[in-house]
Amino acid sequence: MHELAITQSMFDIVLKQAEQAQAKKVIGINLVIGEMTGVVAQSVQFYLDFLTKGTLAEGALVNLKMIPPKAQCRNCQQTFELKEFDWACPNCKSNGVEIIAGKELFVESIEVA
Amino acid sequence: MEIKILKDILGANEQIAAKNRELLEKNKVFCVNIMASPGAGKTSFVLQTIKALKGKFKIGVIEGDISSSIDAETVAKEGVPVVQINTGGECHLEAIQIQNALNNLPLADIDLLLIENVGNLVCPAEFNLGEHLKVLIASVPEGDDKPFKYPLMFTTVDALVLNKTDLLPYVKFNVDNFVKTIKNINARAEIFKVSCTTGDGVSEWAKWLKSRIK
Ligand SMILES: Nc1nc2c(ncn2[C@@H]2O[C@H](COP(=O)(O)OP(=O)(O)OP(=O)(O)O)[C@@H](O)[C@H]2O)c(=O)[nH]1
Ligand SMILES: [Mg+2]
Ligand SMILES: [Zn+2]
Image (cartoon, rainbow over all chains, first blue to last red):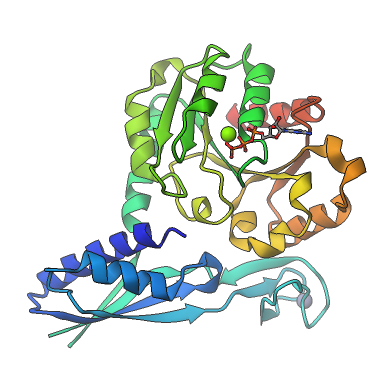
């Protein structure tokens, strides 16, 4: 839903880093996105194509590494993937969990020429 | 050639949020970010909170809305300073908009600042504004399965307010299960059951908020 805001911030970071590295062109952008953020890959690419027109990142391809939501049991410390509508610990069946992955939203690296 | 970056995409927003927080603290303003889906009762809850705490704190309000100023006008009738932010289609408030709003509020004359975020259960969860507390309002007619559908929001908040409890006799909603589910994924969340229509439960919330401010 808020992919435009996210893509804009991501683009600002990418452009700054590419300029610092005196790159001629940005070819690829590698993002790490937690599934819990609800960010949609297609929308990010769509907004990026729009924002990068006429910049050195024009035509850059976005590559998203999606991170599934993971939790840790507060009772037995077991870590496990969170399934929709089932948040019980597979080990001890207790229900108290901490979310430990799935909220990520960062630029991992860029591929430049 | 690959360049490692490892930078938080929302880093720019975080930086401005930190500045907002600094400004709030310098002026001794305690700030609460109120989030909920459309129609859950954010404005009603802001009004109830003002009524409950008007005598104890000087209150200010920021109203976030996609386009109208109806909520801001309603709140202004309570005689508190209100700033309206129209996001122009964006589905959430960002720290930069709060920064502008803070510049238009008499901060030295405010102890408690309530922010009504845009009605949405997804996006506002990711944008820190510089607030001291994040509060989520869930309302009975929305159903008790929302924590499963919007886990990020439910794990992010400091307090959860279940509103429209006056409708419990008419709606299938298992309060015990709902509370248990939230406690399961967010151990620190304080939970309140209120009705903004009857005023039920508002005093417990007001008492807790007061204890957090002092
Ligand atoms: N029955 C009942 N209705 C309520 C309660 N609280 C709010 N409402 C009603 O719910 C509707 C929406 O309330 P608002 O306070 O405007 O909700 P909101 O979240 O600010 O709505 P938006 O800003 O439009 O997203 C109004 O018709 C209120 O009268 C409650 O506790 N019980
Ligand atoms: Mg409202
Ligand atoms: Zn366990």
